[in-house]
Image (cartoon, rainbow, N blue to C red; front, top):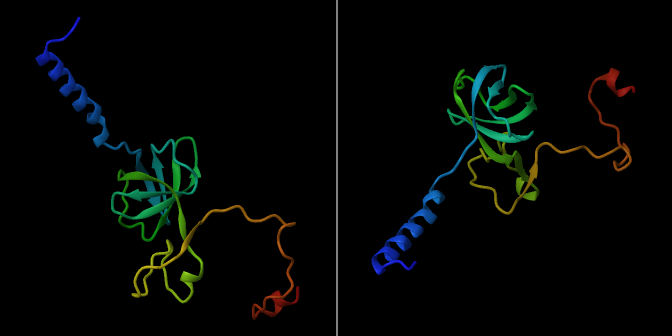
Length: 158
């Protein structure tokens, strides 16, 4: 059965509109703060979060998901937790926490996330490294060849 020119035009128009309909939204996984204190927020509802993933609280404060449990997630808050309240929304960012590294960091003052706070502008030509990485095994590590002076006699004797 062949469509009339008007019906074909209408069908074509509807198909083009429908094909672009679902491209204008974004789905975010969000949770809610159950409790907060001592720099740790317990959050319910972030079922697919990864260990070490950055999250953002409704107040704009950021945190890192470290303690993944069945019912909730323990998130270490970067900065003050006073702006975070029970019931606040928490959003996944989808990225594992990483910070700038390399020679561009020499002589710079940065916060815990590697953002410059020394007033000298943004970092230039730097690489990024993850915060949570597995430590090298004992075989791969270089042995201690120079003692570290602590200033404490009890510690320096060993």
